[in-house]
Image (cartoon, rainbow, N blue to C red; front, side, top):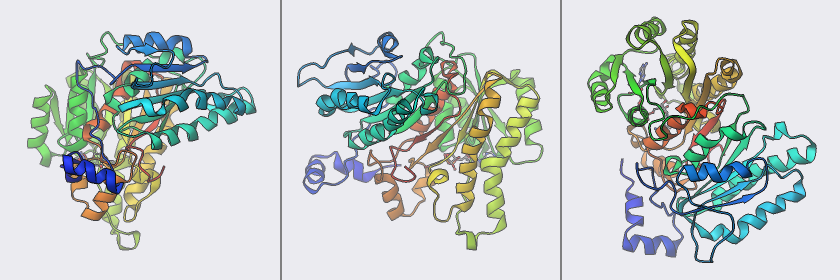
Length: 446
Ligand code: NAD
């Protein structure tokens, strides 16, 4: 879908008007391209804590130049990375000011700020808990201050999980996280092992991934990205979408499965298919979703039932069946697709909001149980993503959705897909129980 305002704002006249009138400025975001450097410049690393020693080697192995002291005034940084795990009292928060203040204007376009902390619930004393909790407000505010497509995230690393952050840092310190902003990510809070992939460019080699609703939109992008990362993708959609589904599967060298996931026999058929054709499955992405919008007073029961069935209850049944049959292999990944409507609520979407908040509940409910089997469960919560679904939204609401975020633009399906691929990586075994919004730091539900 085209964002005409963004095209205008990047033209000569447009740039001038945007500046003069203080209009939203949707900077074209730098997205991942194979072979290109991860960041648009070197990373300045600061802070002193549990992670400081390991940061340099991890960043260097991702091809990132690491600086430990600020350079000349003219230096632009691809990233500012601060280890705040050593902050154990509110007074020590001053260290954030001292590190960031002098370099805040030196973050490159599409640059990154990453703050690393200790989960407040793992703090040893009250002062540390308060200080670590404070990092959230700091980082989210930085996200709102950064300009030109730069982003800020907070990563809480459980004590003991210091060597399990690489996949998360590689994701955040790259164009793969272009539309993820102002997020709080937890690593190691539900245990889990991080297995380094043989190749960071094909971390899913040898894996089988099931993607529901894969014939178009976000699902098709998920199929593309998981296949790019080396997985065999089973693209699932309803029979009516068969032609488009085949196109996606052919494009990614995968296979198709025509199935309505709400059918009573769908879980059993799925188990059978995965077992006999593929010997099991490693990654399950519950992307299929529908909307049937009406205010609650005007909503027919069918609209309620169908949305809850596709977006939530069918997924629970599939998970149960796959686990009961032992079809989801050890080290498996279950990934849900929630929505900011499930966090903030939305007029006319009581059914959709309930179903998408339920997906967050699904993650909360199963993270610990699955961790014992080496399986992770996480979700993405997309904001305004440019798809056929959002192109159908009335103009005024569509423009509001596009601009009311720190990026002043909608995200692309690939932005959701990249976040899912990060969860899916074998190196993300300690990333469990997370719900990460892919919303450009939308004001809705912030
Ligand atoms: P879409 O309508 O383009 O694609 C959804 C796909 O799911 C379709 O191919 C559809 O045929 C399939 N599907 C529907 N019911 C099914 C069933 N019973 N069995 C199997 N497949 C079924 O939507 P999209 O915009 O690509 O959204 C994908 C997911 O992202 C959805 O879960 C949606 O709720 C979520 N999401 C989208 C946005 C956005 O801005 N587009 C924002 C937040 C969340």
